[in-house]
Amino acid sequence: MKKNFLKLKQNFFLIEEALKSHIFSLNTQFYDKRAYLLFSRTNAQLKEMFEIM
Image (cartoon, rainbow, N blue to C red; front, top):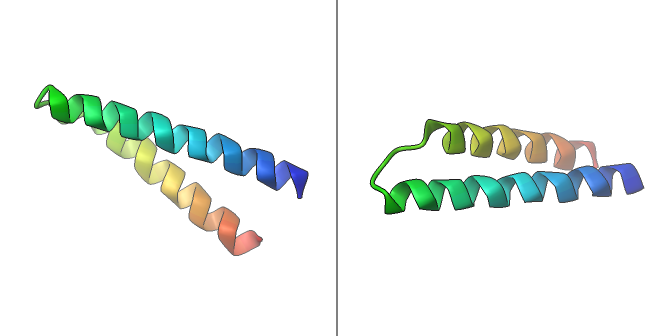
């Protein structure tokens, strides 16, 4: 359970970073594919984790 919680915390950190990067890219009128890919990957990880729990 503790391992799952730590992974969850890490995933939320990744989402936060992806959102910051995405917001930065919107501010500069530049589409950042890395932010989108990071966000998609993290969302998939979260869905997988919640299915396991």
